[in-house]
Length: 345
Ligand code: B12
Ligand code: SF4
Ligand code: SF4
Image: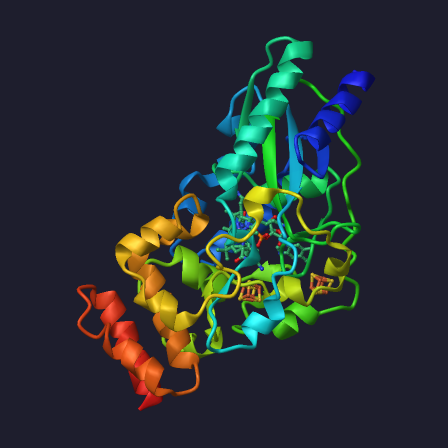
């Protein structure tokens, strides 16, 4: 067993993960907080968060026979993305650094499958399922229990040697594995930088996120009109938001990813807002092929850019661009364009 464990960790590194940990399926200490979050309706319109009830916090209810979980971390921050410069330039649109390259879901799951195949080859036919943001799984609590880091006040997992710019994935298995030491203490201390910087005050208390106010939710998960009172606070963030991580002192330990698939494509790390607003639907589909951005669809893409154009300082070029979309077939797009034009009136 001892050599199997060290092999699993070594294979993980060879497959491009930066850390692998293991834990059992007892997530009871997190279940109450998760249910409380749902009761407070902090999940907003993300129905998938409540759909499966406690299957999310009870792994063996989701996949019968599961006794252990392998948790994996893969860093995604591309080198030199000039995040702050883009955020400060209102002619540019800011896209979350995790979404600049290829969609992570498939890449992560493929690698996790390869890891499980290697385990199969030596441990016999194990039962397993690999996930990355693809099933009702409490990924951050699992990673915290498996020793990968602690859940910070901004609610992302932080590793003391690598910051928080990483994805998480898991293998649920019926193979009994010993648990790694969990991270039991938060190392946030008296810091509250993420809570202070959040443009929409979505972190309503330490370790508590009201997703309905989070720009990531508003630009990616919400499929309808963005609440009017939050629009001016969104600045030029058109897909996701990174502010709470950009300001986190632990991210000075983050290293750029070696994964070429996570490197920016189509100059999306510093795109011109007006140019993006002029993309046709065909162009949107072509340029976001294989990217997570495509999931929000063309309508929400235009909605988000219209808000950013409404937040930019007035210019003739911006007014012309907005006017060119005033007759758009989508009522959602038209309403956000009208709002943006009103801001400049
Ligand atoms: C729903 C979701 C969202 C929602 C809600 C976020 C959230 N915090 O829940 C929205 C759309 C806003 C979102 C945004 C983002 N997400 Co997201 N998201 C998820 C998803 C699908 C589920 C998360 C979940 O279970 N939420 C439920 C609530 C209850 O969890 P929670 O807020 O973390 O609360 C826990 C703790 O904070 C704690 N707690 C609560 N109260 C208290 C009080 C005290 C005193 C203490 C000590 C603890 C405590 O208990 C809760 C239960 O464990 C996961 C994938 C997955 N299946 O896990 C990805 C995931 C969490 N997201 C991820 C990412 C990358 C992001 C973004 C950075 C993307 C971006 N740049 O725009 C942002 C970050 C925003 C933020 N500050 O969290 C990564 C995080 C990786 C990491 N390093 O942690 C994940 C794990 C996806 C992945 N596979 O990599 N996301
Ligand atoms: S991602 Fe942005 S909006 Fe969401 S909590 Fe972090 S800083 Fe706030
Ligand atoms: S910014 Fe400060 S409080 Fe927020 S997660 Fe990082 S260390 Fe914790």
